[in-house]
Length: 205
Image: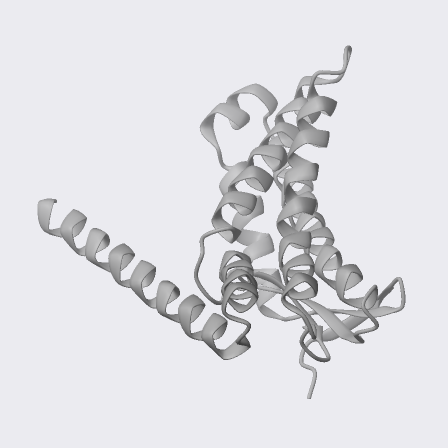
């Protein structure tokens, strides 16, 4: 059963917002609205800038998931919904692609959208006569999209990079389950390395 509130649809795909989305919306708004540099420069307007940044961030996440969705729909795969929640967004795709090449296209579509947004928004900040607050907000969203691109391309499930790895192994071995095993194992190894690094950092402190 679909959780969250339906707020409309985009290109025929139902769009839902989970209650946890409001938590991160408030946190992102506050983190930038309370930024000392922004407060010194813009006073109370810093909160409005923080809210605008938060909304643009989730707009970016929505476009990222829409990239996956349109790639799937182009293969005749139904997309049941897109949901925004605490950790980003997820597109509920009805079934998996039938070939590794098609699976690769669906997996890579989201990161390509995020990369495209980074380039587009970065270019936008260099337009002449833009107000400084707009440059700061849009520039910050551009940088976040670059981080999202790189993070999502980490080759381990459940990230997009894991789906890309799965498709590549599937292509080489002609075995979808081998692709799943390799991508899952990679995700476990990378997760273990990250936890070990965090443990060492805490010990050193």
